[in-house]
Every structure is written in C-alpha cells, then in structure tokens.
Length: 58
Image 1: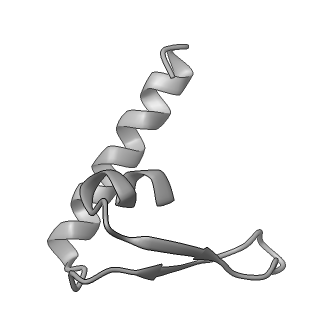
Image 2: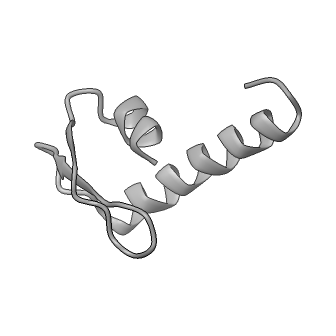
C-alpha cells in the first residue's frame, strides 16, 4: 500500500507504526487529504501490483 500511495502522492512521508496482532500499520503524512476516490485509485494500483507479481513481472 505504501508503494502505491507514494506513486500517486510522491511527497507523502511514511512512518511505520509498531507491530500489532495482525501485522503493522503506517502513518501517512500527506499534504493532500485522501478522499474515497483516492482510495479507489490506491486499490487499483495495489491490484495491478499483485497481478504483476503473480505473473512474475514484478
């Protein structure tokens, strides 16, 4: 997810939070307020990356 966010909003700063029961979380420092439309675009980027990885093109 962080990679997708950085591609869309390159100036975003990331901070990885502590480990939690299901993994970890990110804090995002982004000048842009992320909208529902942005989340849909981020999800598309993630899906595309998963597809490329599964095809061996990542």
